Image (cartoon, rainbow, N blue to C red):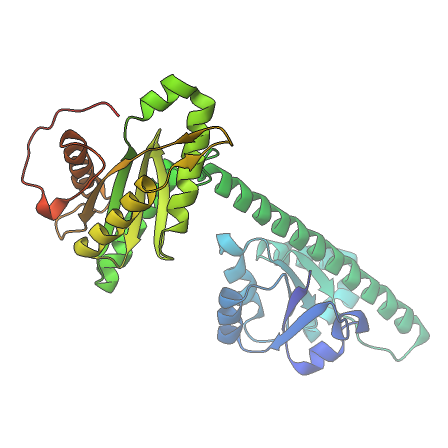
Length: 341
């Protein structure tokens, strides 16, 4: 893991840092001495650790700003005290002044506070400098541990999110994922002034498959069906298992007429070739499909868009199944009776 370190300080400050920081191959060290540039850099490319030169203009503002950034709270911020007055007060008033300053700095947003000693004129100061460098490296290790834990947490959260939004049987996105993605796709389409369509499809007479061959065969058939659907979708199409043997496909940047073309293609690729479940068992199935295109008066959540496509699917099933009905060709029907799969 390549650790990134942002040094908010001037080049002279950077040159006083331990060699293990300045010359380490494993670290990507950036030096910035302007507050606005530093904030912009952190927002665009968050570092793992920030080393802040206290005497530089904007140093405390940076610590305060970072403290208020919830999404950046994992960044480890070390403030290096090099202001002459504070260093003088430390020598004059002793350890209690150091404790007061440390408490104040930590409240302002720093994670660690180090008195930056660079005077090498005496043997005693050389020993103190070596100890100071040891403290810097120890605090750096704390920051590295925090960065490791954060990245592990992100990986775990990404995995859990993927699990929560995936259908375990078909490996498609699930209904929860659709409820999250559809409003996002609608907002994107309206912002970019592009078209958006969707398909709802259902396996015809799927209950007969389960009743005849059992649910394990039915589950395997759904898996093979989804594989075939995925292989015949375009890169911008996203498929979801809506429930049972019913599926929804979002068609980004797709008009109503283009959605009909996609739906008819899917209908053909399912019906034209039987599904081989084993050397001894093949099953022929068909699907019914309904399509709808986003309209200006559709709600932001996509419920009306889904409902129109669902009405088309219902019409396809009531008029014989194994067919596609698009909403532009469906007359207004205020009540359609449900039919069995």
